[in-house]
Image (cartoon, rainbow, N blue to C red; front, side):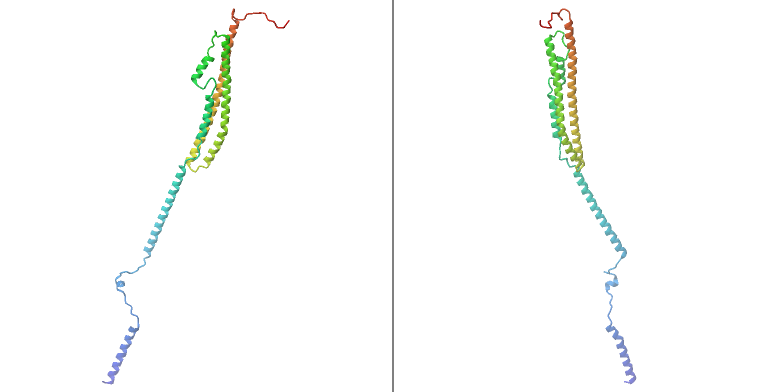
Length: 258
């Protein structure tokens, strides 16, 4: 082998060694098959991410709205329960007792009761047309009966007045209780019931006033009836006194002892 050929082979070997050395010490970058073909790649899409956030925000807002709606419905049910709550206090028994007390006083009217038939019968008997043929004793008896009726009517009026005055204290206590219940009412029903009971109390007081006026009017009517009948009786007795023959008979009178 010639020297020129040996040099040539040595150069070729060195060149080969120089070219092969970087490949041995350099890292090998191999592209995966799924990256080459687009399978399983994680890709960040800003538009899609923003839409997902907007959807989540809208969903959260809907949930908050539903929670608020449920809270409002619960509060509405609570308010309805309060509005339907009944008033724990009732003044019906007290009012009925006051009315019954006044009615008992009216029913105890003496001689002439608060009854149309009784009034017609007794007026026809004691205050009707007086008979001219009645004896003086009968006239005096009838006048006595009328006087008793008048006095009894006045006494009845005073008793009714006293009974109504006795109701004032219980009415005052009941009024204070009802006003307190009305002010502390938790709902519309309790306030309405308290107002209705206050109206019932006022109605009972009006009934007492009617009873007093009726008793006073009855007493005044008896006084006027007695006065009118007494005037008629006086006329009859005066005519009887002045009638010739059976009337006044003159006679001697002794005024002083001898």
